[in-house]
Each structure stands twice: as C-alpha cells, then as structure tokens.
Image (cartoon, rainbow, N blue to C red):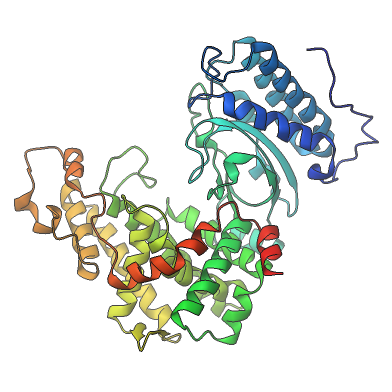
Length: 465
C-alpha cells in the first residue's frame, strides 16, 4: 500500500485550467474505478466472500490509486479543492471500515458546482452512485465535465427563470455507468448515510441530449418525409446550436417542477401515483418551456425558436418509441402531444408523409399546456383519486386506452374501498399502447435509438464525418 503510482509535481507544474483528461493521472483514475466497479454489490459494498471477489489487498490498492490520482488532478481544479479533500477522506474511510455500504455524504455536501457557474469550468467527480437511465446499482463512477453557462443563459436565469441549483454540463470523459442512456448527474443518486435536508445542485448533460436529438430527428425526418424549413434543418445539423437549445429547455423545465398551481408534491418522489400522472407532469414542464420559448423568440432570442423545435421533435419522434412499454411516462407524454396536434390538424399523416403546420404549431401546443394547467388548478379542490381519474380522462380523450383496462371502464370497475395507492395496482403496465403509426415508426427507429447509447458530441461528429 505504500506504492505511489502517480507522481505529482509542484502546483506550478500542474497549473489550474489545464484539461483534466489530458493529464496522465486521469487514465490511472479511470482504470482504478473500472477495476473497483465489478467487485461492488448492488448497494456499493464489496463482499470478499463472493465469487470473483478480489482479495482485500487488491481492493485497497485500487482505492489507493484512485486517491493518489484525485490528489494529482486536484490542482487543476482549485474551485473543487474542498470537495476533493472530502472525497479522498471518504474513499479512505470506505477502506478503513471494511468496504461496507459506502457513505459519501461529506464529499457530497462539499461539492457545490452551482456556486461556480462559469462557462467552460471543469469538474472532476467521483462518487458511488446509480446513473438514471443507466446503471441501477451504486457503483463508483468517475466523470470529467464542463459547465455550460453562457452569458445569455446566465442573464435569463437572473432576470426571468430563477434556478439557482441548475447546472448545464457537458461530458469530457466518464466511466462505464455513463456509457449508457443516462444524461443527468443528480445528488440524490449518490450513496450516503442519510439524505441531506436539501440538495444544492443538479446537472443535465446537454451535449448528450443534443447529440441524441440530432441523430434521432434526422432519421425520423427522413423516414417520415417531413419537409423541414431551412432554419430548422440548419439547427438539426449544428451540435452547438442544439446544445444551447437543450440547456435553455432544461433550465426552464427543471424550475417548472416547483412553479405553478401544484396540487401535490411537485416532484412526486414521495407519492405512488399512476404513471400517466408522472407523464402529465413531465409534459407540463416541457410545454411550459415551449411556451416560454415562444415568448423568448418574440423578444429576439434565437434560442427560443430552437427550443420549440427541440421540444416538438424530441417529444413526437424519440420519446414515444424509446424504452420499454412498462409505465413509460415520458413515452406517454410524447404520444399525447402528437395525438393532440393531430386532432387539431397541426400534424397530418397522409400519402405516407408527415405534414406539419409550422404556423399553427405554437398556438395549438400552448393550448395543450393550458389544458394540463387547468387540470392542475382544478386538482387543488379534488380528492386524490378524483384527480387521478380527471387526469385519465384528459389523456384518454386523445389516446385510446388498452381494451382490458379497469381504469378505462371508470370508477364502477375499481374497488373504491381500497386506498388510492392500492388502486395503482390495477393500472396495466402498458395502459395506453402505441398507435399503429408509432408501432410502425418504432420498428424503423429502434436501431437508431439504440445507437445513441453513450453518445456524446464528439462521437456524434465522428459518425457524421
């Protein structure tokens, strides 16, 4: 354990501001974390009696290599010095306590990226965590990222869309848990002894979102024969422009969870609800971002126009056909948006081509947002079950429920003597199946969507080239 695998020079030899991923300590750290990950159980601990487990000395050496690497890289990132000090202490304590369930609360509390929202600022993050839409286990991950915080976005956050915890970020490099569909870095995914009273940041990787959006949109537009205006085609072809659209979309979406006439816990984390209620909440936040984007475009912000197209295309083309058909609330929201626009003649599928009325799309999309907001306002005066049924009625006005659904038959088909949370068991895994249109589109897009696993801006550009 005395072997020093990473030599660190003076601070002058390792100046702040250099790229973390170019430093020789980064591949050493990445390799150490990749060695540790397969040894970990679902809860992040290491069971040395399990098949394939290392001997304790091998595990200790891997953690030591990680500690040495973090200490070598930390001078590049003086704004994260307190976090890196707490991180190395947490790593050493994990070893000293016998590799039990990791507790990284101290380092989590020391990591405050939202306090330094500076465009291009790097962060080196190491935590035992699960990755949303990625790895469900609390394995260690190492991620190098950069903040996305251009002046125009900072001004909008300061003057119109206060969101002091939001961090727009991009990938520099990452370990295996992010070679997935995960596009977020959230503090609630990290292994800690107790949840803090409040979280102080949340990060969304706009580069992955933009690259995924571009690849799927290009394929969908080609398959469906959509006639894109020149401005929209240029946007889809421009990674940086799409990243700007997504970071703005994300910032407004994120704050909307706690704004508006909310009849419930805004994030619904502590409640068990039918998945269409989660779908309506996520769609409400996206449509609020769309509505604000219309206002921003009118006020001269070019990103506002781009956000409108990003919301429409991602929601209509990617969301409905992504993921499993089991309580897929984001897919449901995408289906609902398409069906609403179709019912109001904004989109038409005719002669094997999809036609979009670009002039009416903003108005009608905002009308759907208004319907959901009315549902919420009225919900404040309703019991929970009545509110859920009203949400079901809104969705089923535009989407056909499964013919075997109890909920579709109304209250008389449900055992109302049970508490509402028990009635969630009567919700079918695929309560609102795909339409024939989306069944056909899913078959043609599934390989494209699968190819976006682990995508970044760099990998997208390499494929395009």
